[in-house]
Amino acid sequence: MPSSAESLNTLDISRFLTGQSTPTQDRALAAAFVQLAKEVGFFYVEGYESVVPQELVDEVFHHNERFFDLPLEKKNELAYTSSKANRGYLSFGREQASLSKDPDQIGAEREAAKDQKETFEIGNDVDPVYPEHWPREEDLPGFKETMTRFYVLLDELHLRLMSLLAISLDLAPDFFLPQIDGRNHCLRLLHYPPVPRSGSNNRIGAHTDFGTTTILFQDDTGGLEIESPSGAFIPVVPKPRTFILNFGDILSRWSNDELKSTVHRAVLPDLRDSEDADGLTKTRRSVAFFCNPNPDAIISCLPGFEGPSGKAKYEPVVAGEYYAQMLEAEIGA
Image 1 (cartoon, one colour):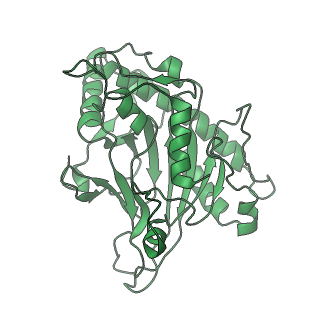
Image 2: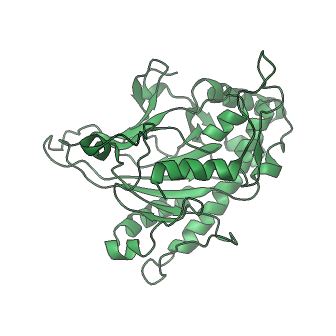
């Protein structure tokens, strides 16, 4: 585990994505990929632009700002209604991502654990069961078109990354494909409004992600931290033209805990020279793509990962049921 933000590794996947790399280079990239998956679970990725253009990423952040600047009554028209659907607007303080979800936690402690953010969740726009909560076109021109394109391209990127992971685990490149090809992902826009520095330091409580991988784009505000083996948190400094890749609980479970689902959190950003120590923090914005298996995928131990005992730690689970249970514990709906 790195001791500082600057020592987090960066993987360049440009040649892999464009087919310009040799098999030897692909194996070396895959080896680095799995090493980071086992030891850290978090790293920077650059060279994604052949699949997801940087101009599109910039446009998504522009729409992030425009969406959260809407009047509250318009955002509430798009309110989140169900953990099974996992779509729509979650208002400020609604979610509690903390690893501690003790029902006996009361009063100020529970209030302090609530996340200081608002989010908008987007799923697969052709889902036959759960429709999207799109804003009206006249309220946000181009929002639906931009987010739909971004979602599709991020799914393509996710499939390529999972192919690389399969290679790194000595599995067939398409090993995961039958269980991850249904676009059962969540595209989440996040907005952390300015808050008093004198209040809680928490923006998102310490937690792990639920799915396979998470692709996270963040602005230059800062505040993301990951937990080291000693229990200390270290910052993940924003790095231009990269995204953060981390691994989730389902992938950890799939690999019998060989692949690391790292605890992380968001806290108030460091005070800058131009800021008032008694004032408000800077706004923070990020965009996360939570990648998940198909709802009916059975998550059981990958071949060769049973460990010295020859027995998996976990019983097989249905991915969709597992994911919905985790969301319900976090959001309460």
